[in-house]
Length: 173
Image (cartoon, rainbow, N blue to C red; front, side):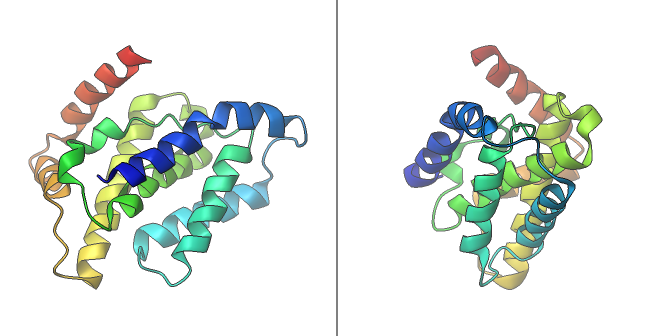
């Protein structure tokens, strides 16, 4: 994963608690319309990661996730495996989609929003669907770290991998 992608999302989410506190004073909880829009954007970007409006949609969704005081995404990018194996022009799409898929899960399953494991699994599975859609659009795309995750998924080992990595991530919190 490029340092630019890591830096961008680290900065966004490192500031999100302060931003939520400040913005939360100016607004109430997210509306049903806002949550519906966020789910639509997350799904659209997962299904069509090279959409002509992807940049604007990504900005809109990041802003919403940071702004909404009632939507909390617990980001642990370690669930994607070794950063060094997720590199190139597509790494920002991948790390963003992890966040967006987790956000979609939190919105669609508010009763499970505090379950970091379920949230992380939804994020990883969303990333893998995004990656497969990237490969359909551009067959030459191959990201070894995501190929490894696909292999774990196919072998029924993805859940155990996410649990292990997530436990380490949570211990550092």
